[in-house]
Image (cartoon, rainbow over all chains, first blue to last red; front, side):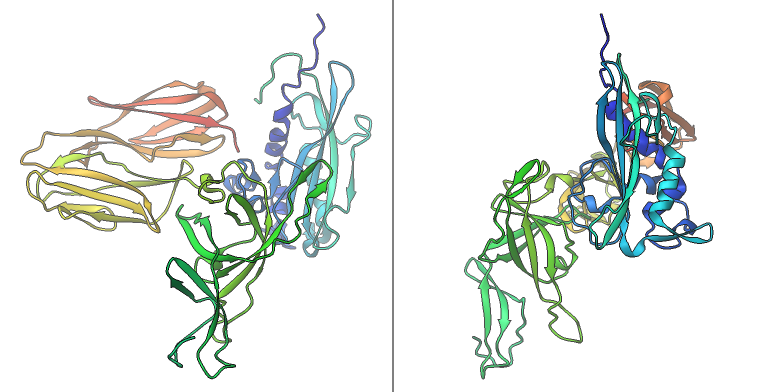
Length: 189
Length: 335
């Protein structure tokens, strides 16, 4: 009897993505500190990194920096940086394998858009995109193969600037893809 | 209108007549040859949880007459009710701590505070703002709301306090020390604790007590979170002539869960008549697979490290002499 894709590892992929991201100290500092010299600030402790993640349905979403959903329903009162990481698109290639796209929306205050990197003033979104690629491009996050920034895997892969509210917040949105083909029980190991 | 021309009146001051509270909306004494204020009756009560103590704060308030912007919000995939109301409330120590996104429930309808007029200072010296105007938008009910009592997100802030030692017996004049742990949503937290006792004991603010009653009296010692007396624990100590040795194995603090990559340390101590002993404690583990945690012992101090999620909790049984105590700890993911 033919085996069909059960998507059993699907729910665990965002968790594994975030766990890979928080291993990157520079990326965490870009999120945590909204100053120009954020990369010169002290590395975050493990507890500080975990506390940035909204995960237990706390009503005060505005207190967090990392979300595994596409909507942050509280108004922002300060120019903090936020990362929204969520499944953006799913396309079945066949009955066994599907291609999943994950979107990373990195938002930051318009007046905190620059950081010093390598001695030069750089756009915070550019530095973030670089650090994200270092951590995730080619990363095994479950499923088949790796998470990739690869147009040949999905034509949705790419990044664009200009998310935000055209006023106090701006940002960059990045889409990466991976494949999934679970024909037996999966778990998050 | 007041008879006394020199009466001190300020915007935001509350007055109570019969069962109603009235809030001073405007002082008009500067324009008039008599002492007069304009007041509005508080038509509702704003309730919210003090996140530091779990206490419910209640403040009489005025909800303005007009509910504006009531058109349902139709956008993309879901329609929600629209509505905006102005909440007028006294500016005091509690209300000045309110932050945007704070939610309130009025007559089973939830609102979220989105904007504030907090700049109408009474004077240029103290810069005090005695009256606040909050713009609140109609929100959706959330699972942790206490709709019946009109307290938003009430069930998200669960505080508990536990006096580690159990009820016991002791003789008159005995001096001992009680320990307490405060939990917020099952996590051990550091909060100020107030100690009180009845007439048969004295207790200091760090839990040291002395029994002063007579044989047969029951000394009651109570500990509660400062600012929230409704969260408390009481231990009874019966004053006796002679005592049988009482043993207790005490785990401090008691963890019920540990997250991946988190390190929890705790001590297990044998107490004899509420006095700590130095006897070594042994332990056995069962339940969760050993690949999901590490547990090490140094004297009677234990260090537990979570290595990953387990659907089977870790059970640890501690033994010292004839005393045993067990705890179950959930092994959770990193977040």
